[in-house]
Length: 287
Image 1 (cartoon, rainbow, N blue to C red):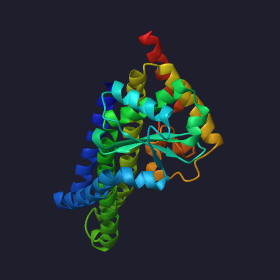
Image 2: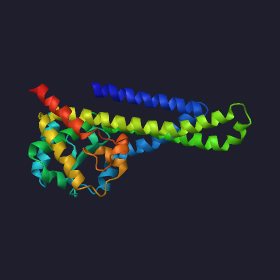
Image 3: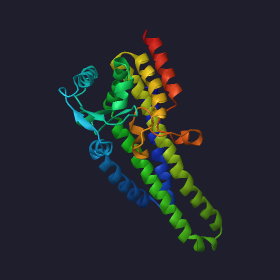
Image 4: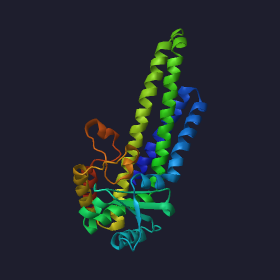
């Protein structure tokens, strides 16, 4: 429940930021145009994300006949989660990772790399796939798309403000307080899109915590998922995913991109130590 409330709060912040930026640009007109443009781009991606990302990573669909153990595992977990059976894919990549995609539970797909199938025990792999099915059940693709739409609109309005400040600089300087207005507009144009991106990343991290908890409930073994995360964190750094793209990094169970320090602020994933700690605490409460 805490993660659901946090997501609601963060999406509300994005809404407020969008309204403020729209007012700065000259009223509702600019805000509506930017929102519609961002909405068209992001919801187009939402409707076709499954096909786009699966093709991007050369994922191959499997059936029960091709891979009975893995397909059967996903089928059992989907039954426990009371979800329709998703399409199941394997990605020909040695880097251990997995993701879920699809616009709703009736049009969902889960994918795992060849690397993750090799290094995890059956219990750990169940924990990972339960995590991915939790994303489907919690409709995280929709939520991340909404967050991306707001952040994209704010970024577009920021660009409008920058251009408006530059072209309006000469007129503003002749007016009392014009210099301050110009500086304020430029500051908002730079700071607001960064703030929106940070909030969008925070939404993604909140959904990962929720998927960990929901996934542990689906598979019934929080420590198996914790053990899988520990292995994946180490192995994915040793064997990086060379074809990973920043636009799709948030979809994977562990971040396929590397980076620490300041870059951790912009990470789509929570700290691995905190994820494991929460799962261990959940295991203690269950038992």
